Structures are given as structure tokens and as C-alpha cells.
Length: 182
Image 1 (cartoon, rainbow, N blue to C red):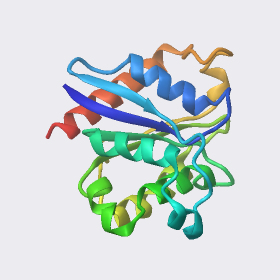
Image 2 (cartoon, rainbow, N blue to C red; image 1 turned 180 degrees about the horizontal axis):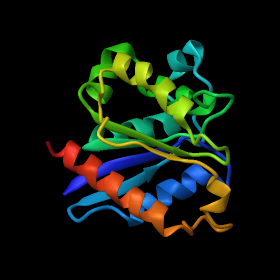
Image 3 (tube, rainbow, N blue to C red; image 1 turned 45 degrees about the vertical axis):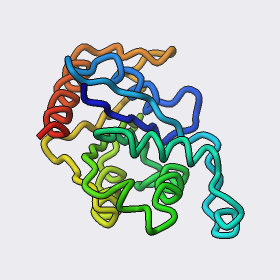
């Protein structure tokens, strides 16, 4: 069984990205599962905080990241870039530097995202690429999913209301699961 960890980069209760992640968990291909991880509760990175001990919320996410066969980042786009809270969580997972290879080295990783804007999350997804390369992940480029006008495709309780989007997400997940297993 292929185990994927999915992480939403939004803390907002009504997040389109969290809704997309939750939908992904229910649309995984046969032979694969998706566990939803959270960045909630991870403090701002501070070397002084790290010196006092690794934060529990970061430790929980880090353990899930290490245990997963692959990781799906579901990223919002804030001001044409990566959300600070999401980058902060990944920065914590890379600490201490001696453990970064164990966490990220060769880890299959994919990025998707949703936005109410017309361009989806193309700039945020692109901004993740140098970060993921630096961390040594094995990023999947076989598919892209940038959900634009998410407010028209995701209902008020977080359900995907568009069959075309469901099919695109299902196809993306199948491709990523195949990549993880390759």
C-alpha cells in the first residue's frame, strides 16, 4: 500500500486548499492512501526556540513526513508566492540540518493548489521548485493541477462541485502514486 502524506499550506477554516486536500484523500487510486497532515501549531522558526527543544507540532509532522512514501503539498498563493506559514513549516522539518537528508532526500513530492484568482497557484507552485530542489526531493513533473476560480468549484462545506475538477484530481493522484512507486 502506497502511503502519501498531504499537507495544506493554509490555516484558514474555509480554505480551498484544505478542501482540495480532503477531496484528494477520498479520490486516491486503488493501492494508495492519503493521510492529511497539518501545519497548525508550528511556531515561527527561531534558532533560540530550536535550542530549547523541537516543537511538538513540528515533530508530529516531521514523523509523518518521514514515514510517508510520498508527499503532496497543497499550496495557496499569497502575493504571487509561497505562503509564509507553509514555508515556515517546511523550514522546521529541515532542522536540524544533519537530518534534512533523512526527511527530504529523494522523497517523491508533488505540488497542487487552489485559488479564487484566474491563474490558480502557478506562481506559488513555481516558487516551491527551488526550495524542493535544494532539499533534495524527487519532485514529480508529470502533471500539474492549478485550480483557478476555486470559489466556483468548491462548495461552502468544502465539497468539490465540479465533475471535471474531480476527474483532473483523480488523474493527478493516479499519476503521482505511479511516480511514487516507480
